Length: 187
Image (tube, rainbow, N blue to C red; front, side, top):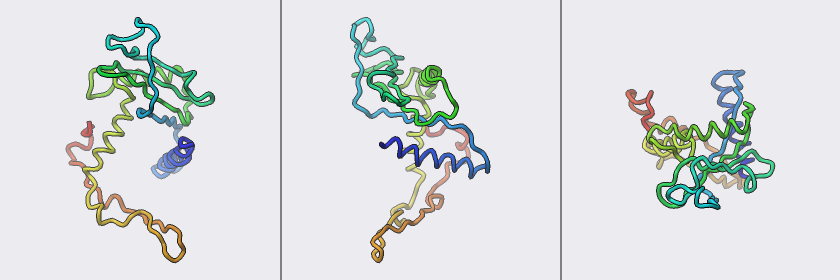
């Protein structure tokens, strides 16, 4: 499945990055996929279990029934729906080398949803996921002159295979102003 491909590629790359930073450094890693775009909706059976807009209550956890029977995954609705149907966020723990207790990990996940700096309410997913999304979006403003760059793979006519070319991303990256490098300017 796609999660196995992520585990094979991304986790290996993170481990290699740690080794590149400091040889022999192999910190324990907990890698979680946070998915907001899915078709799962949760509804309360009784009106007393709904919030004032008719949605499920914030803090609702589903970790059985619709989850993977052998995986470490769960749905968490950490926010109150202001408009429309509240949609839970799906969390899939690919690896947990730290050995977190699942209940404590879920509690930590829920509590982190109250720590988003740009909002006084709980948000639908953990802030690091939001911050990563904002950084990726903001990164587009710091990359320049990519139109004239060769593609990362080109067809090699003689052998019929792909020939890989490394792109020097740092040559196309404008660093942020020094006054904002130690701040969360992307928020």
